[in-house]
Length: 509
Figure 1 (cartoon, rainbow, N blue to C red):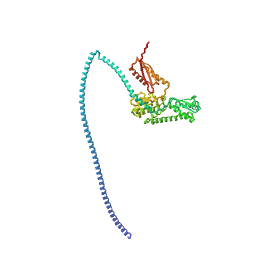
Figure 2: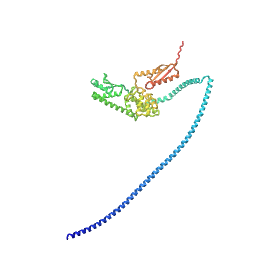
Figure 3: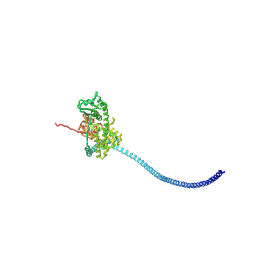
Figure 4: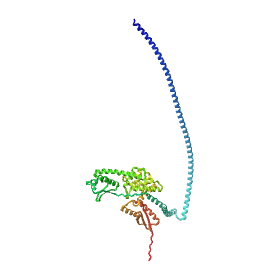
């Protein structure tokens, strides 16, 4: 019993405590719920305001975009209206011009008809006049025309020859002095050097014992050297000298340098020979390129293709009539520059053309074309300007000259070759040139004797007085000069003098 009462009291107290706790918890729950509801209302209102603001901004942006597009459409519409107005105006102008053209066409047709009628009337009048003239002269119109034509031909031939003589005399008086001044001044302003190359190179050695080492056992060394360089090596009884023979001067130079290195090294055998020759070939090729670059820089010629630079460098080892081709090209370039400056032309282009005018003489591959035409093809291949290509191709009259640079290059090339001591000729070629000159002149009718004088620079032609008159000798000298120019190759120029005289001999007894 004593235990039940505390238990009951405990239960009653627990129930009361639970009721109080539940009341407090319910009240707190309601308070939190109310606070959350209020906070949700605030958040809802703020979100609504934010959305409303975004909507208004978006609406404003759309309105601005629509307004801008409307402006663009309005501008495009205005432009179209303006174009339509312009097209309408042009159409009206075209219609007006068409009317004017139609009216002009009608006027022209009327004039043509009137001219046709007048032509018919004139033909009738000419026929009447011709009939009257035939009755008065007793000759037909064809016979009278033939007689008139023959007389006019004779008169025109005489007048033309006299006119030609007057022009030639005037040119000699006015142009000769100026031309001489320009040429002389050009020559005087250019310093020249002369280098003579031969088909053989003499390699000097210290003693004749070296010859045996160069020949080698059973001639192996010399055969290997000849095979590697492409030259012929002549080892004879000449003391302290070995002759290297080849038409190609580059090959001779490679052989000479290879021999020098082999003798200095002391090791001479076929394998070493091939090694040294390969190294020397590379050195010579580099020297060729360096020579070309140095030449272009010295002359102030820029922008050349690398292949053209290499070709210019190869000129150093190429002779022409005994004259070193590179020195000839440099000399011609300087002459062209001075002459072009004297004549008021571009001296840089003239110098460039003068430097490149003989590039066809040192080709990497053989060509059947003359060197002038081949040089023009090379210049065109390596993107040189058309006037430069024409000057190169036409400097021997194998192509028509289209620019003023071409005759300048031709003249300066002749000046460089005609300078005393610049070129050498063998006796056989010299005699053949003189004989060819005399034979060309002797082939013409009426020529009795011919004499080539002044080392082939002047040709005296004596004609029969009974076969050729004074008016024909002018034409004869021009024909001989033209034929010599077309058929022969010669340095400088050849003067042709035609002599006609009449002698009357009587004896007093």
